[in-house]
Length: 262
Ligand SMILES: Nc1ncnc2c1ncn2[C@@H]1O[C@H](COP(=O)(O)OP(=O)(O)OP(=O)(O)O)[C@@H](O)[C@H]1O
Ligand SMILES: [Mg+2]
Image (cartoon, rainbow, N blue to C red; front, top):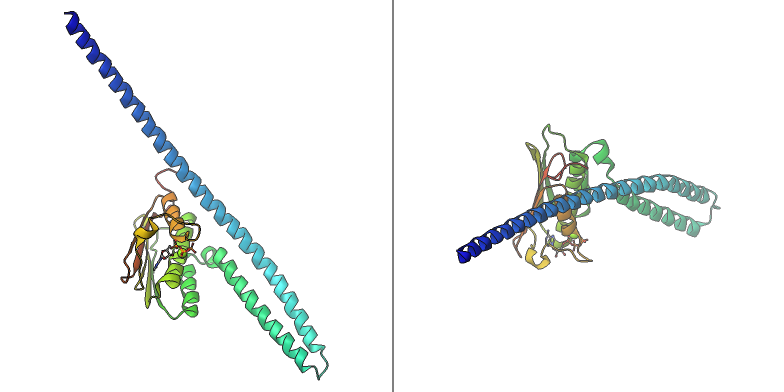
């Protein structure tokens, strides 16, 4: 009798311990989910702040460049006109300086456009992608095909910036690492998801080598992954040495992940 009671009590105690353990795990899981949502929200905020800073920098650069280049060009032009007729050497130097100035201003303009593409604000994603593709095609002898079907569903600003930035980095990677003949960039909206794929027929690589983690020198792929994750999307990359590379991204058009709004 005493023995049986002890056995029953032991069972009861074991049950209670089990229930306590289940409760503990449930609350740990809830806590884990909560902090995952926090991190996602924080990452989204970080992205928004980064874009805001880029926008400010681009505006300042644009503004300063405008007045600086007009002032300098006018000064150089006036100096050239004031030269005496025989000063061929000085004239040549001034002309060279003007050419350097034009080159520098145009490179800085490209930087300002990269920081904050005016097209993205003014004309939208499709025009901004087209402008990027056209600009890159002028720089390198590679055929870049752009397919863009956005439909009627509007993209949130975060989603459209993310698509733009990912396309920009993926195209840069193709040109920097792949030596491809062809690159194909496709963006389309299906229901409430925007899909982006960038494919090249270049040298390819072994993604396991990068192991999904960036290093101090290689941040592009990691930054894309983080951006997609923070917006609640999916990122996949297929590549093999000698077989080209294909990158695929899916993002919710409202740019908010399961973690809710800002
Ligand atoms: N399209 C591609 N074709 C071939 N190799 C690629 C391609 N994209 C990425 N890689 C390889 O993956 C590596 C990591 O790419 P990632 O964009 O993270 O860094 P990165 O381009 O080297 O530097 P960063 O983007 O920081 O300027 C590259 O160094 C390259 O070896
Ligand atoms: Mg890169």
